[in-house]
Image (tube, rainbow, N blue to C red; front, side, top):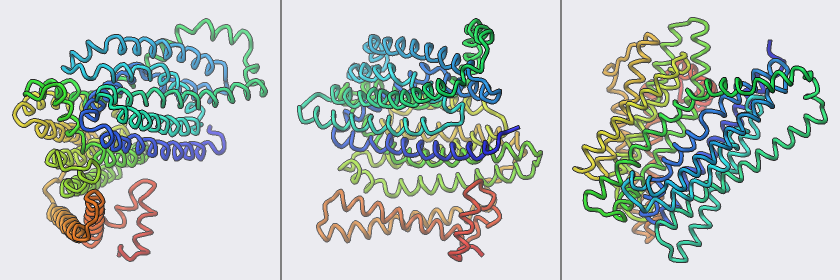
Length: 548
């Protein structure tokens, strides 16, 4: 039986952690813009080549331990114990420190070999800079898992903000210093990657402070003395067994996380080599890769929002499954897929229409605008993939979405090999769109079988098509009008582009919202079925007289 207030504590913790995740991801996404502005496309290309590999290595080094720590600590807390929780964090921390040192050394000393595999030696200094983060990040995330096990999300939230803030601050300071000193692109990119190590150190300091407070509180409260000496000895002797138990739970979690990293890693190990062999040379390949990545931060804002919202559907669907309400399961799945598809397509079309001014506003010139238009449509595929994976998880299907992402990574690699030699970075963008839609299609096909869901893609498609067409026309017209007006006033090109982008986004968004309401694309009853946010939003729209 749950203690009074446990549910509210969990909800409060989830809210705090959700806000922190959104803020930290927002900081992490937007920091790429000053990176390109100050460092240029070559630095941007090196950074975006190394960072997915760094993410993969961090995932391997963590080996799923943070989730395992949280699970084992939560179980011990439910039984009123403390000794096993302390033993879990001791063993896991030792394993994480050893793992971080091992993989950090492997990346540092193996950087030239990794550069050879990538096909570009200019990434070596950045790889070595990123390896230093492995001294801090594994232990930091292990401590986060410990406090999450006690449903205390505040340490994780504070450390995430501290980590991202320190990472971006150090990166910008080094960018300013190195660019003013006339450093090479390789050195500047390495300086940017040093920010990851600084962020890891800052996050670890925060978690260390929380751990010190927890340990001091434990001494004063005498919680540890509640365990008998004999029980402590028995727990101590079973440390090896506990490590095996941790690994059994942790490794499947690690494999699932690896699948997500591998989709991004396909570009790292194919594009620099393919672009170089196409005659661009090492430096030219990095410049091209940097241009290719210009559209990513904007699309990542959409996927970040989709990820944050998708979390709401997992418990709602699990609850419907527990009650055995098959009709409710099917309705929630259908509603979720329809609206994530529509919102994803609206974002994709909006970014594609406004790609020109967005490019100039963020990166000073229009180079690669055509590529951004292709990359824009990964937003729709990603949104569908994210929500369908969340719905499957809510129904208890956990492994399949990871396997589907592995299939998408394989498809992305194959399509890169086929399209990049013919179409350059536009070919890689097309491959990304295809890979994300493949993952979404595989998830939806399985979801249809699992939830008894009938997909009626062709039915009633005229209304959504008309609304999306109206969005494109409104965004384009507002963009052109704002650009013409502000250019005539002699405003700076980047400010003009930024204003035109915002005007187009506002006009397109307004047409989409009004069109959806006026055509009854979403009824009030359907809106209220959206977990957490549906009922308040329906109430607001009713007050504004936008719902009948």
